Length: 230
Image 1 (cartoon, rainbow, N blue to C red):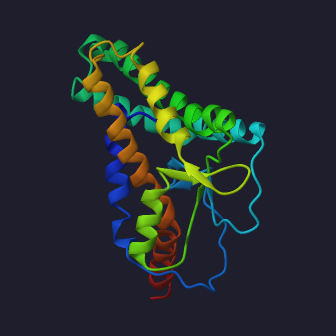
Image 2 (cartoon, rainbow, N blue to C red):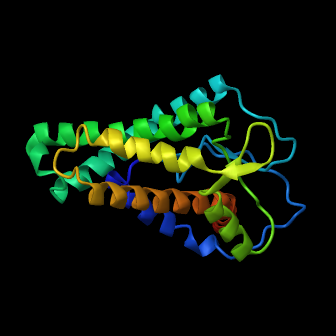
């Protein structure tokens, strides 16, 4: 997923900020993992923990990328990002009106599609790395926050142990390079580095959201239950 269309993700992530800093009880029962965060953002590659770890096969990695890429939420997000980009006239060559929106939408969805396959399937398969985010779920809020942010740069190997997250960094670099084929207005090195740095920051924020999403869900359920019993 490329930074050119991801600024909206920050607004979504900020909605979970109240959950940061909470502790999770070690004896809580495991809840079924939601496949969409806030009912929109695909959440197929989050694992509740590392307990009983088993590596993914290449076909499983491609299946995971496909689930993210073809999820209805991804198509909706592409539309939201395309609308924002057109509103701000982010790429003048795309134009305005219906035809312009079609070009913005195609580029936005292309960003999401290419990013998913590069970072979740192609590079993880070639480099034998695990594309999943393994939730820590216990400890102080600050320790969990540091863990979530660190997973951008350090990931698990299929054979066990950890390794620098080449799939995230190199995969997103490749996705940014490919995007130059259809973003004609900003093709210089400075813009490419800016897009990559922004994307890494967005993915880091996404990891934080994945780490604390169960806390947010429990808070919503508790509030709903309290309202229902009044």
